[in-house]
Length: 144
Image (cartoon, rainbow, N blue to C red; front, side, top):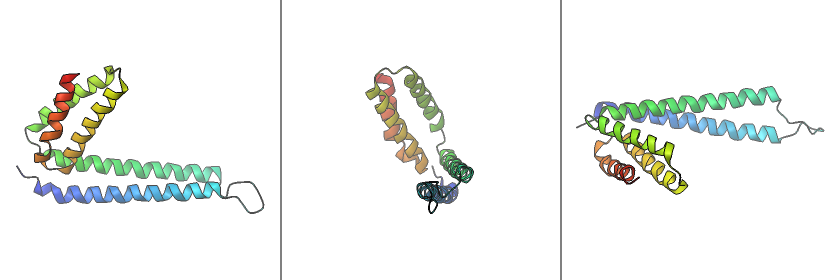
């Protein structure tokens, strides 16, 4: 099974998402500096409340766009999963149900850790990397 036609597009989307995330991080750092700075001779911030709110809104928008690109890259990776998609959907639905009912925080941490491992494997776009995380998540869900 090959996902090569999508891998370049997937990587390009991830690179763009990384860049948007980095821009949002830079915007946040700069905004925080501006909030901490004072107008000369006063105790007022160097940036107005309206300007700060507008910049925070821009930061959130950048992060949302980055997340959308990451999701699109993951969707492209999932195209190469073939018959595994049904199994992945089943086990993640079971995990979602377990999350709703878990009483012990340590179990919640372990289960979400397995879900993150599976999500990371899917995002690689390499179906051969899915087996171990899938099996671990499946075993965790069944043990609960």
